[in-house]
Amino acid sequence: MNDRVHPSAKPTANGGAVAPAAANGEANQTFPANKAQQYNATRPAYRPQPPPKRGHRRGCCCSCCLWTTLTIILILLLAAIAGAVFYVLYRPHRPSFTVNSLQLSKFNLTDTSLTSSFNFSITARNPNKKITFFYDTISVKFLSGDLDIADGSFPGFTHAKKNTTTLKSVVSSSKNQFPDGTDTSPLKSSLKNKNLPLKIQLDTKVKAKIGKIKTGNLNIRVTCDGIKISIPTGKTASSASTSNVKCKVDPRIKIFKWTV
Image (cartoon, rainbow, N blue to C red):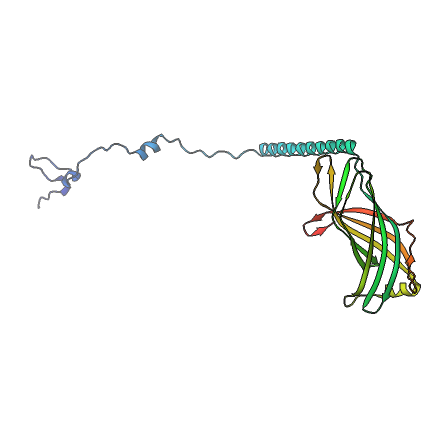
C-alpha cells in the first residue's frame, strides 16, 4: 500500500501539519467590523405600525367640517351686519325712469325694409340723498314684438343727488333692411290695424359715488313696456298715451359668457 499525504495535512519543516488556509498563503485573521455592520448591529428591528383607527380619521374630518362651517357662518353674519349698517346710513334706492312723451312721425313698411321715426322724451329720477350716479352713453332701441324697428342714443350724464333729468331724442330707422327669413307679418298686421305695440329698451353702464367711494361700472337695462301708438296718416305725427307705461330697471351681470 502506498502511503499518501493528504494536501490538507502536509508536513512542515518542523514536522507539523499546515492548515489549508496557511498552505495558500492565507492566515486566519480577525478584521474589525465596518460602519455598515456596526449600524446594522445597533439598528432596531423593523416593526410595522398598525394603521390608524377609523374613528380618529372621522374625528379629524368632523372637526375640519365644523370649523369650516363656523367660518362660513361668521363671514355671512359679518356681511349681513355690514349690509344692514350700509342700508341704515345711506338708504340706497334704484333710479327710476318714466316716459314723458312719444310721437311717431314716419312709418313705411315694405317686404324687406322699414323706415320709421320717433320723437320721445324720458325722465330719470335719482331718489337718493347720499348717492350720485354717473351714466355712460345710453343706447335706445324700439321693439315691436321681437323686431327692432328704430335705434338711437342719449349722451352720458351725471345724475346728482335728489335730481330729476329729462332726456330727449329722435329714434329712427332709415331703410333698415330685415335679415333674410325675418317674419314681418306682425308688423303688416299692425299696419292694417293702424295700431303699433311698442317696447322701449335702454342699455347703459352706470357708476355710483357713495361719500368718497366710487364703484365700478355696472350694466343696467331699462325696459318700458305696454306702449301702443297709432300709425300716422299723411304728415301729421301721432302721439301715444304714456300715463300707464311702467319702466323697470334691472342690473345686467355677466357671468363668463352669459349675461343675467
